[in-house]
Image (cartoon, rainbow, N blue to C red; front, top):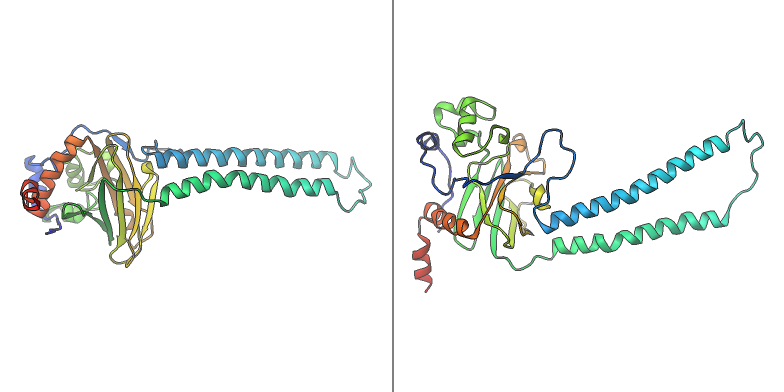
Amino acid sequence: MRVAKYFTASFASLAGLGLATSVYAQDGLESLGKPIPKGIAFQPAATELARDQQWMDNFLLYIIGVITLFVTLLLLYVMFRFNQRKNPTPATFTHNSALEIGWTLIPIVILVAMIPPSLNLLFKQQEIPKADITIKATGNQWYWTHEYVDHGFEFDSYMIGHAATLGDDDADQAMRRSPAVMAALKAQGYSPDEFLLATDTAVVIPVNKTIVVQVTGADVIHSWAIPAFGVKQDAVPGRLAELWFKVEKEGIYFGQCSELCGKDHSYMPITVKVVSQAAYDKWLDAAINEYAGIPRSIQVADAQ
């Protein structure tokens, strides 16, 4: 049995009364995977995939840097050595065999050197390992539905500040840094700078476990992306794609729909909380009870 969770006006009153359950609790987690002001580098890698991607990017930058420097120096040399004043009589040769062989072979060697790490990274991303936890992420206009397929429950994740996360009295303050939205962020333990990043219900996973995410779309093409994990997968209606990751550090990580999907595309974030196994088990019990309405102990008993 799966019961999707939709927030109504009751959310605001519950938050105001401080009745957040363990499903919403931050448990002292640090916000790690998020953009920073004036940041130009990658977010700190939280998975092996992200580390490998960043290494590959640096590897290619070194190659590009050397090529750019060489071409720039070569252009400067030609400008000063063979300008009209220093070389009034143009040369009459038509080709240089050694030079032509060199500028053909050297790029081939460079491209061949790029193939092994590129293929290794590609296969590591696309060969999906056996999952410890499988989650199905469905993109909707404009929120995500996350289903824990092994436990028979799902919930919707709206950006905190969406009208669905506010009461009727505060609906006119949605989608902006209004007092009601800032209060909703604070009630769930997020800082003001995490507006547009935090969702009312986060994906919760245990640290150092293999997570497989099945990605699809319900209406148009979306994209499930977490930069710190090094994952991005288009959510195409009618197709079920997969990605995987294993997060190495507890914390809160943020992502975003990365495929233009309509007018509220910018308000479709993803929040992932990575916790200890004990904290995850505690959260899972509460989540199953809240979203599926069936305590996990009863499910286990029925299975036996």
